[in-house]
Length: 144
Image (cartoon, rainbow, N blue to C red; front, side, top):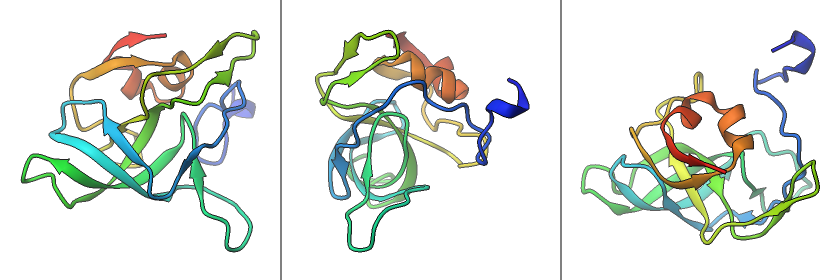
């Protein structure tokens, strides 16, 4: 990737405008096999907003989540995750619109390399997320 295309975080920019519809407090299904089942958004990384505005996230955003349901060793942990699906439709650069049946995320090990904690992602993820987070795209079963 050319140096001019990188951002401060070293990530490839998304080529679409995603509506930010997942507020802090939204519950997401966990799409990988890390042991968590349901996660709740508690913060959005790199969010810049107005004072007193609730942070929002969309597909491709990194969020901090609290695990609400899952294995006993995963419950009540606070971990980073990336949003891979949302119910609200978004428009791609070629004009097509895409939406999913649920809101879902993938749990990450660390925020440096964006390595996923699980080994398989259940369900589809958009190609924009697979390109931006290469390690997440590697373990995806279906890329749409």
